Amino acid sequence: MDSMYVSRLPLLSLVGVYLNEKENPQPLYLDLEIKISLKKAAESDQLEDTLDYSTLCQSIQAAAAQDHCNLVERRLTDLLEIVFWDSRVYEVTGRLYKPGAVPGAEISVERTLRRSA
Image (cartoon, rainbow, N blue to C red; front, side):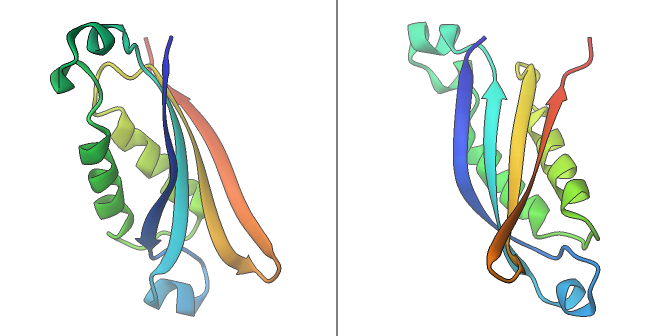
């Protein structure tokens, strides 16, 4: 299986348990590793034969800006599920970064989702 990567996709999101986090969108960053066959696209050189990463990134950014959630774990899971809108995706691993969550450290969470058989 091949992989497609998205690195440090910038997001603005209402995520957190504290009042200021519920009222003020904060910057997050997302890394993705998407398991998908690239064989057909490599042979055809046609966009319809691969995952349109531009459209995917726009959809993820729009979703991240929607409703508030308490935990980055929930936000990450919701964003990873968007990747499965393309039925050719077999697996996706994402890491969501929340800079500034702890002074002097960058917090991140990572999850892998696989398409059920």
